[in-house]
Amino acid sequence: MLIATTGITSGVGRRFAEVAIARGHRVRGLVRDDSRADAQALRELGVQLVSGDLADTRALASLAAAGGAADCLVHMAAHVGDWGPREQFERV
Image (cartoon, rainbow, N blue to C red; front, side):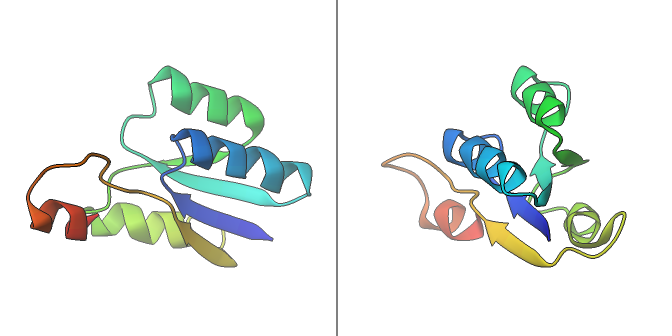
């Protein structure tokens, strides 16, 4: 199964990728900056990275279909924090 996911650079996202790959699945993840160390670590795990963010419809299309259609999408991205505009939490 090919699993596409947002929020993959978080601790939860990375662990999700590790477990999915250990169970024989392929993982594709959306990352804002694929040059960061956390993205490199995911690449070394075997995660296919797609650069972009949640507001980028082309990046989301690539996440879902680049190199073959994903079998499912797991949305783990979040705006983390206790304060901020409601719209910011809802957008993510």
